[in-house]
Length: 209
Image 1 (cartoon, rainbow, N blue to C red):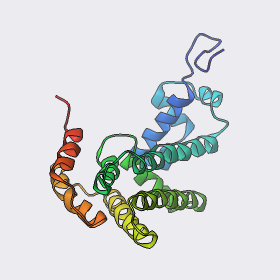
Image 2: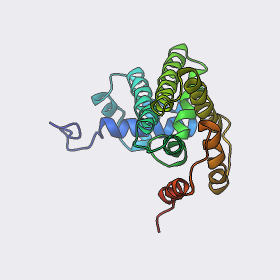
Image 3: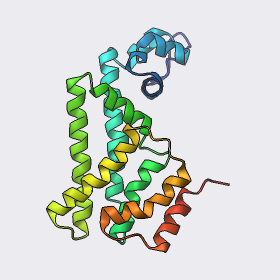
Image 4: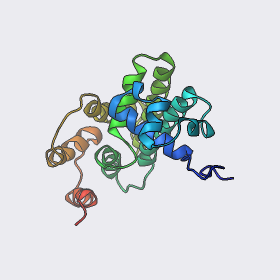
């Protein structure tokens, strides 16, 4: 029997379906929305279906936190290791994950950080994620010959600015933010990106159609 099959002929969903619903409710409303019955109603499924995939709400919350680590921290660390011919291009790779509607979710990030304010165990996970992210960004700078102490400071500068955008919920128009990026890169790396580097960066962010 697969995880979607029901002996009575119904549908119980899947672990991914329940987790996605929990993530959406969490981002939209907060932790109180991540409860079994409201999620069942959201999905149009029986409450008992939940227990095919999670032992209880605590297991779902743990899965939600692990999902955040995989999505957001994973996306950032992946960006720091992406191919770049120059340090400026590497900085653009990093900035890009905070702009694109991709695996790094600003709403998810904000919600988890809010959760951490009232839960010491979650706060420790957030601190560990921040350390891992800063370590990856520092290594990115070091890869281009920046000395360790300076690489650490440049990494903090780059990371804390981007997280600040999320924490402050700045409603900066996309095009306005794009105009600031060459100067951000100059501050982070010491040199502005070339015209060609910015052209490639902009082309990759251009809406389809």
